[in-house]
Image 1: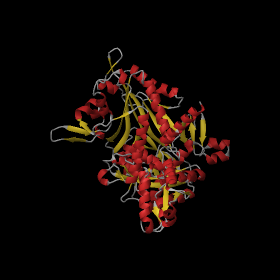
Image 2 (image 1 turned 180 degrees about the horizontal axis):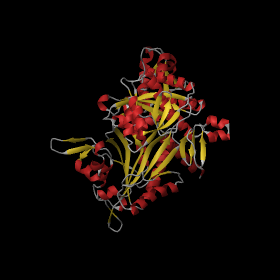
Image 3 (image 1 turned 180 degrees about the vertical axis):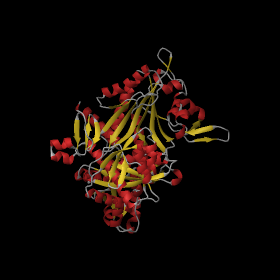
Image 4 (image 1 turned 90 degrees about the vertical axis):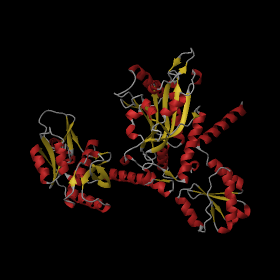
Length: 518
Length: 111
């Protein structure tokens, strides 16, 4: 703060924090050596983050004034805002949320100073024990090596934090609480339930307004709301994460399938259908039984067999390929399937049509020679971009995920697979973002991300190249010299999940869908 | 398809069959509600096209179409209404395909 003051009183007034040799510090901290110093104000991204973080503490201050028996848990910064998890004897209502926000505004208006105290461990424990903040005590116990901790004092309220925080509540004026939801202590559904209060905060009135308008727009476009209003689909508690499609919603869904079917037929695909349930030994061979079982629905039959509902279409497709010997003349085989897959997900992670447990993929597997791989990748990328364009999404970004640490296959194989994806993007002069180490254990992948009408990004299509599964299942073709070779397998889904894509379309068009989908 | 009164229900259901037979998805609202109410309901449901059937339509076989944005288009006969809607309901790939065919034909003509 003194450094800022030495530059000018105006700067000192707007100082939120400082950065010393790349590390953020509080405005009250002193700099005791020669260092590179940057003054952080609300104009800096870090400044806005600090504002949000301090707003979370302010939630604590207001909540404890209104509901002294509430226990504060954790209050981090998130995209565009912050939240605070709270343990309280009854559920908070919308009226409570309004009361908390009112109290926060009153506290902000008093422009009180936020004080920092670096306290020894014992003092911290004593402070929270006195206040019966049992969760804070557990959090302290989680950090046994910390000799001292920073406490931030908001008048009678005390919170523990790494910081930094604003020096005064006058910086927190442009905030709003947005919603309440449930959460679990330590994020584990086996633990007690907490309540999470969300809010947003910005550097100025204009940015806050713009963000609130955006939230309103998101609310207006919410496909769950529109699905009800336009009579498109519903969900039922007896089938969590599964869609009941109503006639108009099913028409939309079917038109998308018909559309994709035409595009695939014109692009040299064949369409097949494989069984929904297959035996355990298949899933063991594919590795799903070992690596994916927690997401699989399984059943035992009276003839003492164990079967699983397919969580992915690839093993079925591989069995289909293996039916009958293939020649190099047959390749590439572009085998499409509108396959319904079933994946058990935690109920907390489900979200309308966007995240379900039972969904239909516009899946296809392309079996080709190594020489054909580049051309096949190029064709798929062209097709997916053209399809998005036709459906009203012209802003598409591409992510390339490369070899992860835990992987199958040797480096030489990975070089070939990654090069195929990179070269096909180069050939089409497309930019991409690199996600090193984010590929699947059997191969690298491209992800296609759509930007919608209000600037939100949705990951939809994927393209993966794979030499592992073909080897694992002993896939073969006879080459032009009569030798047996292993084909390369490309996995691609362009809509990704039909259910999800339908939800995205409903939001993109705010329910006012193009006539061909009505 | 919305009827102005129950008097026109029989004509409307036969007309609806014509549109359905032309592979257009048509639903008939022949309920005993005021036409203003029916239009409001269907607008809220974001139905892209509304066909209003009343005395004029029955008498002269004309077709009056109301778009979702309130704009109205009149057709002198049923065929041109079917043609218009068939065009307007084409999926984007079919539109592109048909344009491609047109361009190819034009190119052949200039050879």
